Length: 294
Image 1 (cartoon, rainbow, N blue to C red):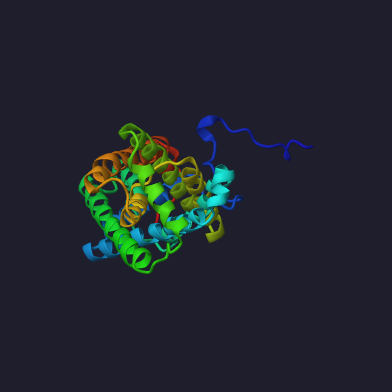
Image 2: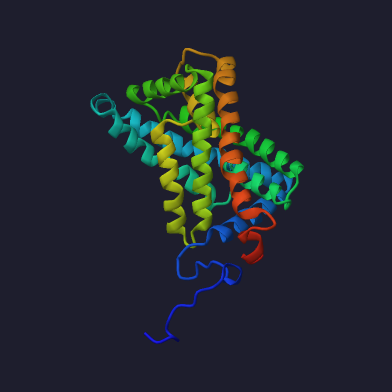
């Protein structure tokens, strides 16, 4: 090999910016630029756009949740003989709701916890923008879930078999009748994985890559039994419709509050803030070398 063919060794200060041009994915700095741009776009949504998008975010997550109940509830024999396999198979169906949410670009408060925290720490959006998005998305995700539970699940008698309706009650009671701290930490684990799913979807350059990037982390959190506040807005009420052993007050205190707080820690604290620290500060690779978003 001649001297001209030898690879050039750059001093640290002269090394060219990292590039992913030969890889079919955005680099971490480029992905974080897209996350920041997404946060800016969310901050510019009108009230009506934010409300409608949040409503459909709740509907899509409920769809995946209902599919999970239908599959798992319809296989009582498998759940009895091999619960791990039953959980794994049912959990595989759940991510369809997240795929629809991200690919249709509607609003989901849990993924927005990572996005808005990142863009706000980058000073691309304000704390008011963050609060406006989180609160509105939270309320109308809940509205969408209750609509789906009442109209498209309960009134449509989708869970018509006794095995499925019984499972709906059992899984709802399992989400509420447990220690407050368990729900809090399960909420952290859940939204950490949801934030990673969002990150992977942003890094993909085609829809197949995005779908795989969403599916694997979401499948993982469902299989592990972690708790997602918006999914619970459907999963617990649908169980209550069929007769759980608790009321609304216990649902709020024992599930909604700890899971929501855990989701904030997982999404904002374990995804949004660390990504900003690694790639979003003024002296990091993301801000110095990545192209400006359109």
